[in-house]
Image 1 (cartoon, rainbow, N blue to C red):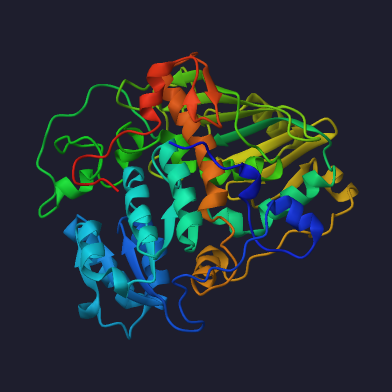
Image 2: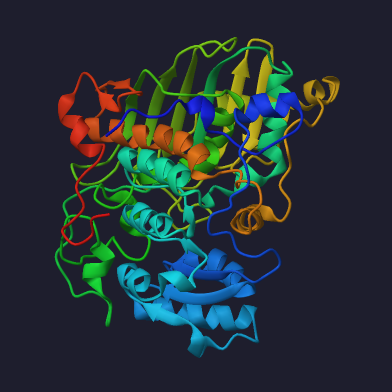
Amino acid sequence: MTTRHSRRRFLGHAVAASAAVAASRTVHMPYVLGAAQPGKKLRVAVIGCGGQGTGAHVPQAAREHLVALVEPDPKKLAGALERAKKINGDLDVSTVKTFSDYRKMFDTMAKEIDAILVATPNHHHAPPALMAMKSGIAAYVEKPMCYQISEARRMAEFSKQYKVATQMGNQGHSGEGYRRLCEYIWAGAIGKVTEVYCWSDRANGGVGPRPPTIKPPEGMDWDCWIGPAPYRDYHKDLHPHEWHGWHDFGDGSLGNMGCHVMDGAVWALKLEHPTSVVVEEQAGGTEERFPIGTKIRWDFPARGEMPAVKVYWFDGKRKGIRKAGQGETADSVDSRSQNKPPLVLELEKKYERKLGGNGTLYVGDKGIMYTETYGNGTRILPEEAHKAFPAPDKTLPRVKGGHHGDFFQAVRGGQPACSNFEVASRLTEVVLLGALAMKAGLGNKVEWDGPNMKCTNIPDLNRHIGRQYRKGWEV
């Protein structure tokens, strides 16, 4: 693997104001290769038709020109077609080509596709995106951008090499909240930030051995679901959502929510490579499964005038809780059982307000700021301090049309999408390093050489940075 290009070239909307250019770190030219004609409906394929694919991406594709769906579970595929018809009553679903294998889709109709939207399990994020970019097709991929660190770098390199529009599905990056966070922090609202506390109520992990083999759902193409990962027989706790908790397919609660919750810290604090990452606490987990509760710490060096910073991640169930209640989602825990940073509990009590099941605190030498899951609710705490600080100018470019709209505009030849792969790879690597630390085990600090993409003190961990794809799935 080649040494990564300098990350100072990676962020990017073209902007006129020098402050915005400095924040974005580069000025990109609009995409020209493979750009669709302005105003013309884009030919879009959706890969992965589970909850996120059918709920979030099929409607967007149906409002353009949905040309193909890829899903190994025929029931999910049928649900996606039904959803598309409800969104666009003029759509003739018989014209939408369906596949269980995206390799066959690309072989059959690559020249008939302008863009793909990928909402598969994590281990399938990178391969179709890489295939698409090589074919001049734009790629939108759900968070995290990929399953393993080497894929993040390769996807960023392909995005640059093939000059196609790309986007990671961390929709908060298109919103107002994280932009205001950046502008407040860069204006000195809370001084020098030296600690960040992120938390999530998700508990995507497990305990105990692998369940016994059973038959996959009727008609399901299980071999295609496994795809590039090591083969195993079907068992419970995998499909349609529980794969998050298994090392071979997901990246735990952190992989599920980290690219949403940690986005503000990486962006506002201009975080690059950490020097180390370590799991300080954990509940549950096995050699195959991620924990159901963790506390993870990343150590980042000083960046220009910004001091060194420690970033903490808390997720899932608190240690000592034998049985947690369910939270707002099926894979989350209730507030009484949740593993939150002590500072969050302290501030909730002090200011008599709830800070939610997911969020981030930014601790500076002059105050504390807070953001919600996707960057909303950006405030200095307490509210009196927020009102007292003069609102800074809006120096960053704003996104019109939402996260998909931002991507589709790039596909049509506009400016690069705000979370394009060259930008998103940086955030994705931070998240995936936390997953690597979980594989290292409790208390085993991972010393990280970012430019050379390797763990320097536990050489065996480097096999998890980029595993080989199963035969037939190589890209």
